[in-house]
Amino acid sequence: MNINALTPRFSGQAIPSTLLNDLVNRQATGKLTVQNPFDELVTWQVYLGNGKIHFANSATGPEERLNYLIGSHLHQRKIALPPKINNDYGYLCELWKKEIFSFQETRAILTQFTQEALVQILSLPKTNCDFNKSENLHHLFLNLDFQKSVTPLKHKIRYWWELRSEINSPFQRPLVENWDKFNRTLVKTELRGHNLLKRFRQCMENLDCLYGIASRTQLSTLQLALLMRPLIKSGEIKMLSYQEIQTDNRPLVVCVNDRPAMQRILQYTLDAGGFRSLQLEDPFKALSILLGQQPKAILLDADMESISGYQLCSLCRKSGALNEVPIFILGENNGISERIRAKLSGASAYIGKPFLPNELLKLIDPSINYAISA
Image 1 (cartoon, rainbow, N blue to C red):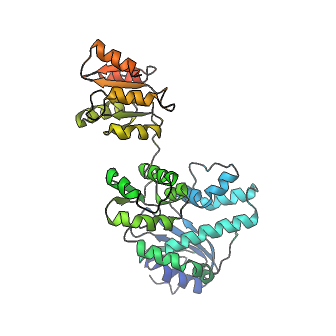
Image 2 (image 1 turned 135 degrees about the horizontal axis):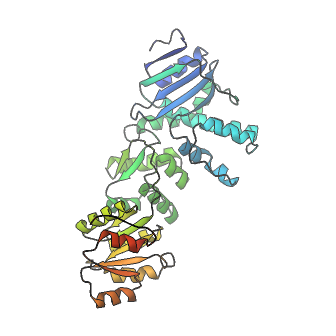
Image 3 (image 1 turned 60 degrees about the horizontal axis):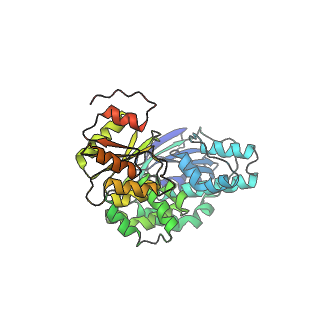
């Protein structure tokens, strides 16, 4: 990229740290956009005015960064973050206009946003960059000196530079492929305390990005990245590229069944009926998982090897959280003795196999008229 003549707009390959330093030295005014070379969906922005930094942020996932950086401030003021935010700078300016944050508080928050973004930008290798002189901000709060702002961040920039081969941005989503191995390793990590371990595990189950996990665990993204690095190197965690995940608001039905063929049948039936399903194979682990969910219904196989569906149903009924949840036991036999046994264990009904999909769905939600072919 030739930046010797600052034309209204130019783009090309450059090392972000070198390019930004040159723009500052030339006292440039405009917006620099930097793409993450490892994930084309992640881009960063720096707004400049006469060589000073006015603001830096991400063009990607403003909700995640806002919750990570100011979630605790909003919670203290009993303010809920909107589910969709198009412009984090505009949102923060609105909070200032409404006097939720003072001018000085807003400056401090915007400085924090800017420094966090600069760490990510300056730790990137050569990548696609774009500078547009015509794009500027309204309601200026900051006029930061670049070198003074970057000096206290150099150790973080160095760490993130070294982490890029494992974690290319805080927007990545960690995926666990072997939960048994992961859980055994997790108890040996520096995540001390039952609640912290529980929150971390829940975030991993939800496929939260690093910003989301950091918000829940009250760790910085850098602390989290360094903690997860050995798990990524060992293959226990796979890092996924950033993508917005649509919330699945369908009612949840939890199925505990150790037969793969039956799991597939239940999965198809429930999906076709408008339900979200969670398939669990190990009945011993099922109870603790069920306590952390809010299922519309629970389906238990009667004849599991390690513990029967009747026994698991009785255990569920002893929990206040699951006492009112409809529980259905699925069994091979359809005699009177099985139905009595199911009733005594606390089940809502016994379902003999094979069953018709519409009959199962009608039991789960009698208010809906289902028409699914068997």
